[in-house]
Image (tube, rainbow, N blue to C red; front, side, top):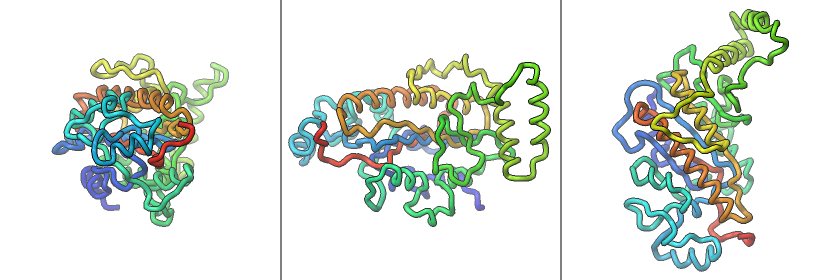
Length: 338
């Protein structure tokens, strides 16, 4: 396979503008608007907002010829007034949801990009099907070579050593088609528990020695994966997860997403070979009582993103990119339950 560098991949795939992806897309990047990144390991963090995030509620209009139509016809009970949404630098037509304080700040610091009305070329109302297409990066499995788009991105890396350990990770219980074709992708919910199942304490040393012998010289794919998992477990157990000190005194919210992003940051700062992380988070199917539910979700998302961003500053300046994506958005008209 021809190796390409990170910037060539991003420019070639449209990730600079995040075009061709589902619903509203939010892209945070240390070097997205800059002149390049220093040599070394770059990190791509792909956050998937399961449920169909309402982009028109996250980034509502503030002015324009259709503003009155949005307020009075499309969303009479759900719209956000221009006096309530957060102003964005250089943008008079759109603002941010009032709960997205940290995200608006990132945008106003030129660290975030937003693209409206992008998605599948063919309409699809199935959350599961749309998610699959997004993870594959195509609407036909035959167009992907049997791989997910994160696998193809990862395979294009010029920095991955042959003996890479923990180069792609999912901080959660779920797997994803985005990593289809990548047998090395590691899925773990709680890194502190990622270890061999222990029996009686007197068996511990013998158990470890036996397992090491089993995978000492693997020749099959199953054996190679087993050896990589064993080594990854040893590396993970060597990290002090309990006493992690985020950079810049960043404070992660006490939430699943906060824990997931903190895990990614700690792995990355531990100098393993991490290059790609898939972070799934759900709850964005807000058909009922959207105003309250969406506000709570946005508050947590915004705080977690800000903490992760600040955690990696300034030492990893220009070295990481975050993409937020949902399978699709919501229709322009509000639901009857809202």
